Length: 187
Image (cartoon, rainbow, N blue to C red; front, side):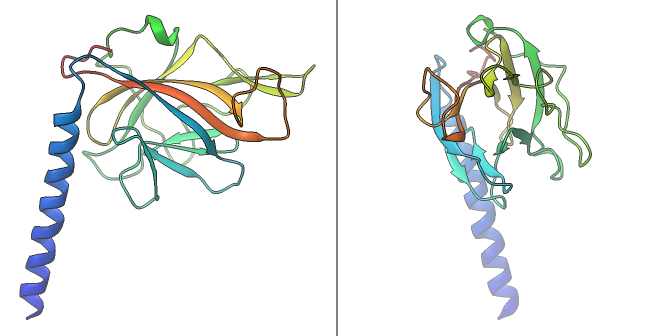
């Protein structure tokens, strides 16, 4: 009886994994679409996990690609292959990236994230005059997701509602835009 239950569970999990992959591959755009994720609440020291392929917040034990906690951004590189997320940060305008590079990607480690923390090191600058965290507009993040798709991403704001005047009391809310490459690797 236990063997039958275990075999049934294995078939169920395997078929759901295949279904997920088929849905994602089927839904890859022929012409890339820019998606916007708004006000991801990252105020606590606990990370918020996001699946770029599906465009939703998920739990840590699910397939996630990128995670946010305060000003720290990490990718899902610590899981076993072949589903590790790889990332690179480039000094290039989001709109000017038309093809996903096939090399140059790195993995996060337990000791170090590729999207480096600190002002000017990763995705933001700290404005001492305004005491505000401001995304670097010409800095883009390129990823290869847990599903093997290429993504370009730009963090637009660290404040709820993307206000023009910052800082506000509502810091720690990420808004970013991203685009999945089509099957040919074009954005």
